[in-house]
Amino acid sequence: MSRVRRPIGHLIVCEAAQNKKADSAEKRARQAEKRRIYNKARKSEIGTRMKKVLEALDDLRKKPDAQAEEVLPIEKLIAEAYSVIDKAVKVGTLHRNTGARRKSRLARRKKAVEIHHGWYTPAPAGATAS
Image (cartoon, rainbow, N blue to C red; front, side, top):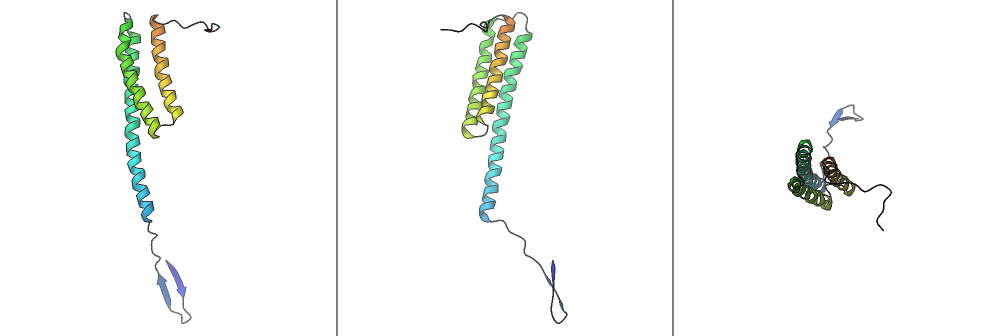
């Protein structure tokens, strides 16, 4: 509220009108909120899928008499997780490097379990295929 002095000595009080958001700003806010909810759901799904894969791999690692065929259902879970991650990257929910890092994490963990049980032996560091 501001006061303006009149020459006569009367005091006038003016109320400034509140700044109203432009229609385009309101629309942008609605769109952003819709996108936020959509992206949150996608990220949550990615987290859930990754957690399922990692838990299954941990269970397999702890199992002393595990067979190589027990990896097959986990590979299906990994494929589903990859699919969800790739879709999130495609629509822009995740950065492509973030998607690649998450996929790499799953693959590394799977390979570690395979090495642990002796189903996979890494090639020596110096050996290269010609």
